[in-house]
Length: 205
Image (tube, rainbow, N blue to C red; front, side):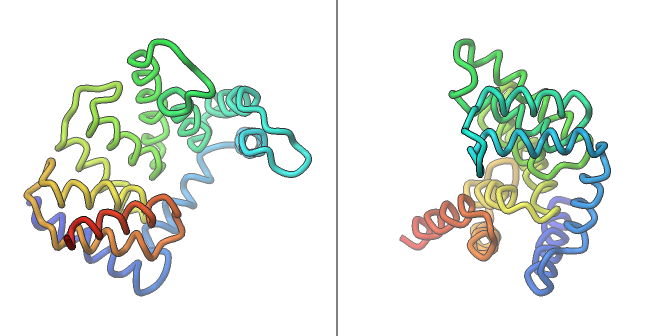
């Protein structure tokens, strides 16, 4: 069954490579945008401006977090992901009990994943892979990465490739890892492209 799933994944990614955004990705993006009202999504966007300090808005990470939290509580999946990110990854927002923060992050990522958010699936994969906020489980990590990757998420493809390369949660298959890494280098996610190039350089040695 796992081999069949992997072949289906590769076929979907190949289709996406030939025709730009995949049919699945287009539908996922549409469904994500329909999960919230305009007010919640606007709060999320305003939070982004404060987080990055765009235009005339001075950078204010805590202001950004508060706006994201308000949007997240209203059901905005994108904001739920950013709230989870702040708890689990951004030391500029919280300090102290990291284990508790990881659990909180996992809970918010789970809420966003329930709405089909591809970034949320990637972060759940990261949590399961590393044991952040949940017991380490490579099979769960592979499952979450695969869900994210099939939606066209390059970070999800990167995590999935790593599982294939190292044999974590799936039978080791370096050729599939290379395929996924190369797909990442062709995308518009700078982090995934840069990291994938590094992984490819290590494989070739």
